[in-house]
Image 1 (tube, one colour):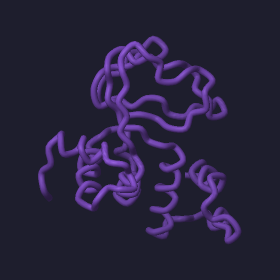
Image 2 (cartoon, rainbow, N blue to C red; image 1 turned 30 degrees about the horizontal axis):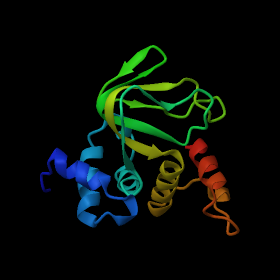
Image 3 (cartoon, rainbow, N blue to C red; image 1 turned 180 degrees about the vertical axis):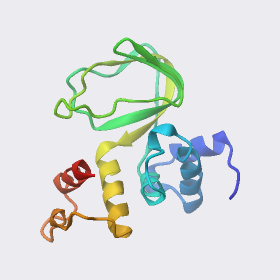
Length: 163
């Protein structure tokens, strides 16, 4: 396996997900593989996720999200720091995961200094896990796969909650 530098990773991550080459996907995979928040994913799921994660950069002294907003993604901090509910998050920390509060944010996130982060779309994560399970024939819930709407967000979310 080739050894990639951090700048290679950032350049690959900054490219729009649907425009990444196979080499760029491998570079993103090699970095994400070492992140604790993603360590529970199987190889196929993580490889699929590499096709949808995106790079975000935010200036300091701003609010990333507010309490009560719909949670559509969560983050892995690459640089900088953020403050959430009395705790400071530093690089390689994950934050903003969906709560049990009906998918709404339970607190606000304040960006303390200029920060770079990976945004992981919750819907795309569900899709990646679902597709990887189907590809590997690990789907034990065939009633969730319907011919009428196999790729709806509802089916993926329902499937994910059974995992």
